[in-house]
Length: 115
Length: 117
Length: 240
Image (cartoon, rainbow over all chains, first blue to last red; front, side, top):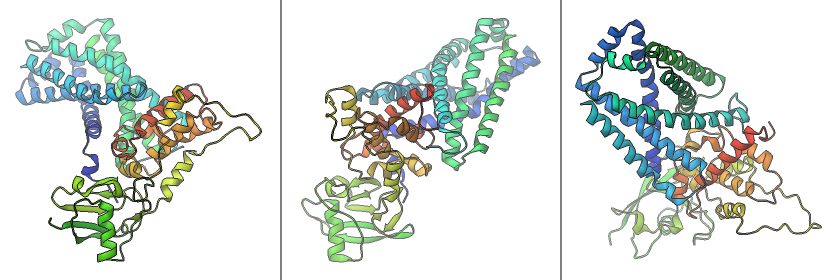
């Protein structure tokens, strides 16, 4: 028999889903990121034209999402490092809330500065 | 308990490399996030970026370290995802993951060179 | 009170849920419900139980999607809309209806070297183990495990990786790693480390969430990760 969402419906599992999904999306994004920056090899105008293309709202939205994903993956990862390397304490379980909070702050900071 | 082609010690060292690279990346990512948030204020132009980065050895070294850490961290994470989602095990998986790592290294260092030289 | 509508898994790996109506009582456990079905409605229903007072772990089943001891699960706590869905434990072969084959679970216990390996004989003096010592506290946090299988059944890594030893076996190994009398820990760390061992745990914490004895296999596995890493870095890991 297999488990379904009812067995998975608890905070530490959601944290895992966020961590895995954000990791995958970031891993897919990275080659694009490296490519875009590599455009500078063809001269400043190439990079500039890419940046101007990225000025549209949809792209800015995607960039904000990426910042959120990066912050979430990092804060979630720090939580895991704490759980794995520090001796087990009950307060470590609320690291999840702290991680979520910090990610949102980072995402907001980006959004407010980029628009 | 060995699973696939790598022996247990190698598997444990892979896990260790992932955690160590994670710690390095935590620092890199915080710096990167602060930097981007600062840089995007009042718009972003190639001239502004390249004006700050060209010839900047310290930042080049930082981003080179960032690329190296990512090239260790992301493929090992992908390896877990691929084996758990698709049941992929053994030598084929390890080779595919090495290829991802090398690709990230090549394109990443190319980007660092493009922006900092 | 309205009768309970109970869906019970019938068959083996393939099968279907069969519906029963069971009289609802003031104070009733899920085990009471299953027992009523077998005694009064369908004697062909296969299920396991023994102590029925929360000591043996035999009655573990999946109730409304979550692994639990049915003798310790009050119907009031789980039958929100008067419905119950009862299935065998997940991640184990189904023998029939609600009965699973526990052999793979205990085989992995053995693979994790979950057996005490002492170095003394009756002619030696007792080993002095201080109860408040750090190692003994860590061991004590995990030794109440009775091998019920609830954690193993709740773990997705067990579902995704057939070789994964699972939370119970790893928790037991950790209690032995912290047992100062045990002489087999070099080989034991080798047995529990790696892709099919503690390093495959992703800290979903479903095991900790569901353990009826409030044990945290996640904490034990984290300890094993650290111990195995230290051993690997020193070149001291197991037999390989």
